[in-house]
Length: 355
Image 1 (spheres, rainbow, N blue to C red):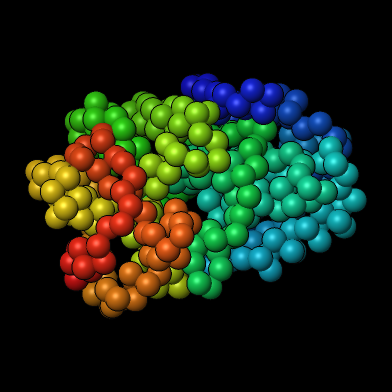
Image 2 (cartoon, rainbow, N blue to C red):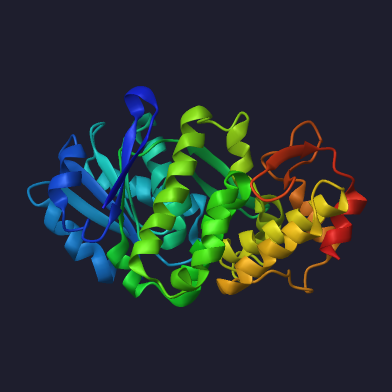
């Protein structure tokens, strides 16, 4: 098992990574300060793992709230339903929300926890590879709006992240591959040695071999934990973690969150960001080629659908949270491991890579 820490002073918390952690309630039960617990999960995950988690809640007053599965259900309406469930439970200020599921569950449950009585504890129990290596770490919570993804939310750090890799045994192959996109992203942003390690271990990771998988998860989480510790609310360095996301979020929104998984959209977005970087003379086509090759070896898409007009995607990109005062800011790179924030990118160049 691996143990990492997100260092935020009095709000620091552990990230536990390894098999069997759901059953290891002695580890995470001690973090529950009150007697009320609401477990937020979804209709796919709950039948598989809710009973196991519940064994660690014996003696507490707890209930569960289940979402339908999918990004389309990360809405304000469902936040309201979670808050109503907390009210029905009689949750006090020392209550705890446990997010048992992927990124949609974690984002929405964390946002509800941030809202209830202006902030109560929550624990992340991610059940997808994507959420283990990305959304569960760092305290970003929120929901989607019709005009764009994650436009409403709050920074609210969890008490802990409990990543039981045994649950990945039931993860569909497409979901597993989507998680690999976020692992590649971390290496592409700031760790060229990790990128080379991923190239060397791509076949083992695609085959879900446990030892390299634990190492990949731990290395990605350690990188993100360091960034979050230095820039919790995304005033500078943390924005780099959005490599590929401005393109990817636009693609997801255009498809009404039903065409692609988030990791698939990020994979395509990273390739578009790399091509734009090369078009602007910031990086080489060789680095773009390495990125495309690695993503394809891991079974990920690298080209956007022709169904979405480039102009529409550009319009959606302008709603990205990183933009300010009418200026579009993109995360681009100067090659593998050298991401940076770039402002005032010409629309014509963006459209050029979207076409």
